[in-house]
Length: 319
Image 1 (cartoon, rainbow, N blue to C red):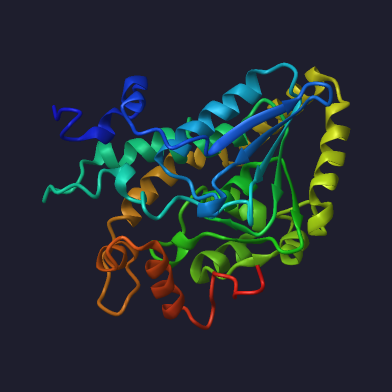
Image 2: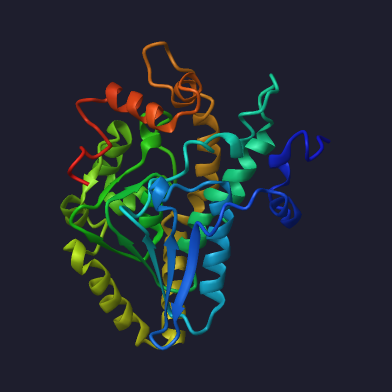
């Protein structure tokens, strides 16, 4: 059995493992207003457009648990600090949590590659299923980018209220394919739109998201927080037991239509997709990141140059 020093990512489920990791600050924060019965979970890494690193992945679980276990809180709002809701996993860490990035020539074992996805991301006890089956109503308050994990989080929340500048997609669609819980994506977007975004990666804007049912409301950016709070306060007036039973009823329905049953499949599909072969003329994020010396900006620039006719990044002056 490899030691923790040899293969550290085999040990991430142990609390002692996290205590040994360099603390990276409060990247995700939980706050509440007990009088209003509302809790907020804020992605608090604006300098990185709220990208999720290894440490933030654990903080996400901790914050959701605090909110779910606090009887003062009836409704949970997810939001992002700074310019956007969030841009998914941090490209600097991408792959490291699957065991890649070591100096070993041997590829990571399947238990390493699958464990993180199973227990931290797409599995039945991963972050996304944790929110999807949360005991309490959840609202995504979205402005700017909702990319990658944050796009999937919008799908898992019970409601989404977004600003006029909100855009949605998953960068992974352009270098590994249709990742995630596909029945949930289809239920959120419709079959043709789900296939379209997965095959092209082209972002969906706020009005398109409203038209297809991905989001509930679109508000001016200066009214976004006010409108989200208004809706949350209406929900918070409902009896706790009524909210709990409603969430459980929806979970039972989602089991029957196959959404909850797909979480393990999402784990397996991602493992296969991260093992695809790239031809010389195809965009390879990991090879590009290595070639650019780990420079995330340069890595993204190469992607945008490859897809110059359908960019994911907003043009300067339009953020």
